[in-house]
Length: 117
Length: 117
Image: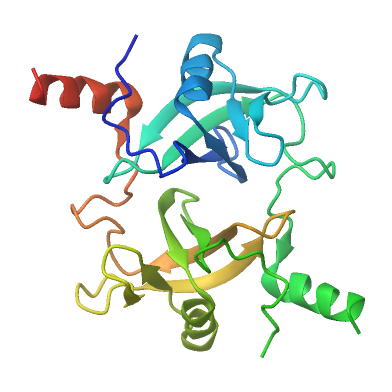
């Protein structure tokens, strides 16, 4: 068991975790981990996050089946961001898209401007 | 000029921005943008961030020369994270490494445990 004390958790005890497909190298999503969810991720070998909206531990894919098998976890130079490479069992996004980053900013702003017009 | 009002800025007016090499698909770094730095990024076509440690606008590479030419900017499903694909002019990391994510978590914790032993 590795010590996680040197990781720079934010003032809410969280660290952002970027999830990347290990094979295609597509960036799939970003979510947050607390120490307990990171510990469970290391133990389980699948991504486990902290849901900020539901304030609970969230084992990705526990209900949808779209788990993410962890290949490697990287820590950045100032130890306040994680990069996790995974083999995903299905789409990362709740919309069914492979990646949560499925819109460019111009598509996004055009759409939201239409919506509010 | 696109409207950026629909982006979900956090309580400090920031949004995390993941930076990925457009060619190699390597994840290079993560940094934060406020509305003004995103506006400047769109205008300049190079990444401009908000430095949380220095509390100032930070044009990446302005002093080092290691600018990042923007290819595309993506917004995630809940509009609270950006993914920016770039052509980097040099290493992303201040250490000289191509990517800030140059250590696995076991390398990181082993090193920091040695340091504090």
